[in-house]
Length: 381
Image (cartoon, rainbow, N blue to C red; front, side, top):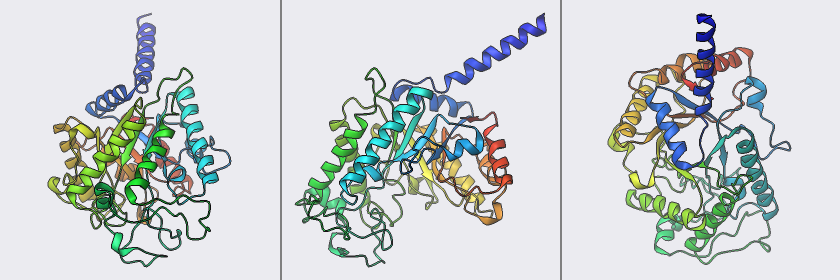
């Protein structure tokens, strides 16, 4: 009888413990849960393109088919539904798809999205074959590449610049709206994002919380908010300006804000160089696609330790927002021999880890590696 009671108690306790991890209603409760998990050595696992809004069946999940899991946090991007690069009809479709996914996942599982925003440069009209819209490569000569406007963020902040936002060079532009300068263009893009966020409400009209990772991989120079295109001071101002605009046009929104450089730094000072301040950041994260490289793993582990330490001192959530199995030599043991070792390191505390991409897992051994990882007690899914 005593054994039966203890077994019953164990089951009930674990059910309650399991249920607490998505027991969130607003941004503050999301932050509390992630911080709690982090303090207990647990990590929320997230997957980008868990639900692909560009596919016909937007609610179908390749990840779920492979693993049987749904996840409490999943990755999305505002890129397809904003800006002036895409045609209005396509943007409208993507907007509706994003809203539908967010509402459905919240209704059915209390799952929340982790958004990035690969917004295109207002001056770049080139296609992906030349240079992806968000990537403002100084070494690539795209169509009508405006070198004199390389510091477009300074133009946005100071209300300078020239006509922009003409859309894609393959279109005739007759139906596109152009703007007198980048600030006018950028304000409209923030309004557009805010209008989507305003639609993230439950069946009773209450806002659904989201994570929003602003202007990521900022210490590199392949995107127009990267180090070669904006000063440290202007980057911080731009981060804050963006956040304030979103809050202005989506005043009821429940947003957890994330700061996220790439891995191209070596010291805490370098990592925090562009940090906009505690008042504007809830998650201190980074991206690391070299995590699966056996020759660079030691550095990856050290970076995870640094970010964990920084986040703890600032009383913030720590996380990795983009990583994946990018090394052929580690194809079948990425989770077991690399990501798990990062998360189990005694000096590492990460509240969230997000994998970018699903397609790199093409073999049964890779499925098994990931499935075993997902079943570990330190993973919240």
